[in-house]
Image (cartoon, rainbow, N blue to C red; front, side):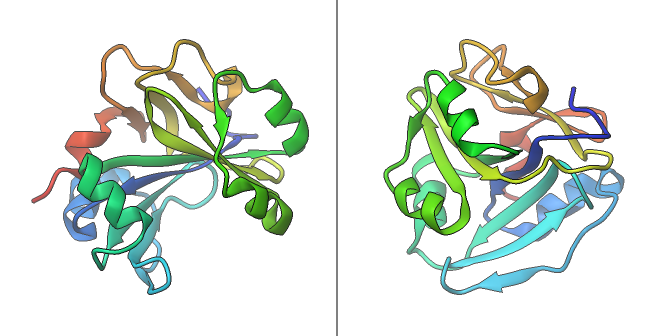
Length: 184
């Protein structure tokens, strides 16, 4: 479980076909829903759910182009990436085993101290920011990822999935990312 005082889990991004049905499924668990924003350059409509640490980011592709539309077409709705904050990106990257730096990270590290990591057999990306971990009560307390053979970091809230599903504990309730993001 991540600590309410200091959570390295910044957000969990889910690609969805439509934002509204997922927001309805979250119902009373969603303690705070931000504004729905359009990002034409990314080809998405997006909304954050949660206020501080460990938010959900729901992303709906608005065109057939772009990385999120490709991810939705290839894998269907579900978990896209998990974003972590670390006070020292270089130190974090030096201690990660089994994850590969995505080539675009050369540019994103230089521009924004953000690295993207992929792991063979794990159908999600890690977005790692050099930033202090967030304070506050996390909306998402754990993320169980398929394809992991061990924990990335005990305090990151990422654990090994017992099956081939990605599982999220949201507001104390364990939910399948695939079920949460299913159409209609």
